[in-house]
Image (cartoon, rainbow, N blue to C red; front, side, top):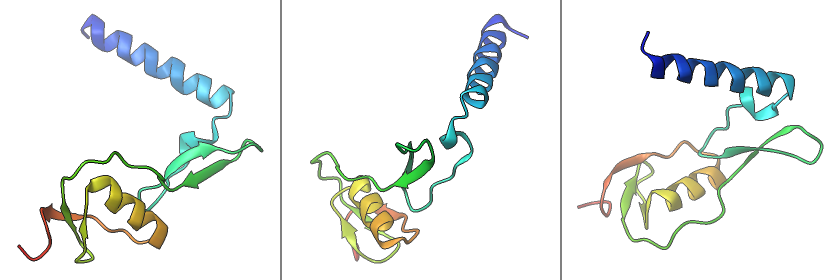
Length: 95
């Protein structure tokens, strides 16, 4: 095993053990629809939709047939609608 791989393995084990010891609630939580996991004030895992996106224009066509300003805007809309919308292709829909 090369030294770098061994160090990475040790770091993973330490991180994993600490998360188990500290009872990191997001460690085993999967959030659907593009949401991300946060730890609530009560210490429980919560899935939260993204709320802000950078103002960049990189239009994408969603699997729902709608054009979004960028990938982040698609994730926000997907999460709010609780749908698994994905990028069908780059650019406006219908082109």
